[in-house]
Figure 1 (tube, protein in one colour):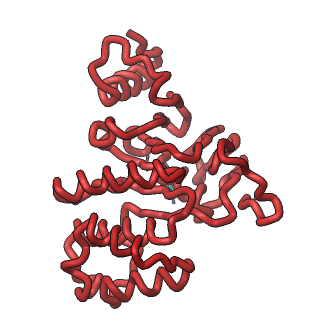
Figure 2: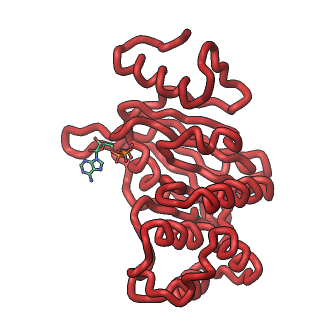
Length: 247
Ligand SMILES: Nc1ncnc2c1ncn2[C@@H]1O[C@H](COP(=O)(O)OP(=O)(O)OP(=O)(O)O)[C@@H](O)[C@H]1O
């Protein structure tokens, strides 16, 4: 369910995106089972989990692209900026034309912001290139630019680091941290938790369609683990074995 303008009496600290008891089945495959998720404004919220744990399904439900089998979604009336694992742009248009079309479709009028995104992601050099001819990394950058273009209060980015060069990765982390600091929420689904370790504010771990861990960064006790990545892997392995994974 998307909030309507009349419903939208959020204050600054209310969650910007919430899933309540969301389940999704495909035939006899349970992709998600009773998932609650609450994303706060001004946070970078990482969503991790082994292959097949339900991350993409959760994103698609949050974005309204897939209907949950049960449960509800409370999303902002302004919409969510989607950044997909697979390219989501018009392949026959140039990069610049894609940016123009998406800006027109979403009412994104802030030219300075568009320029900042393009220079941060080093997209400038391929502005006149047909989008379908872009390399994997530049295709990912164009998807990211389109997701961020209209400054949605929340963006959901699926594996945003995939195929990016190291300079662009560093720039993207800075851009996302700034975006967060302006009060927006950034939800990142990734298999590279370590790359986001310095910027994330909240971690949700999915395992077999259920929430295994869901805590603000400051509340996570690493125990004997050296990093969030190590903790996540240990918890996931323990869940596979049916134990708690606490050290
Ligand atoms: N359209 C579909 N039809 C049938 N099963 C599906 C469909 N989409 C997802 N699934 C199943 O739902 C489960 C969760 O898949 P999902 O793609 O959400 O996981 P994921 O965590 O994003 O995985 P990965 O890390 O490999 O991208 C998997 O068992 C998958 O096979």
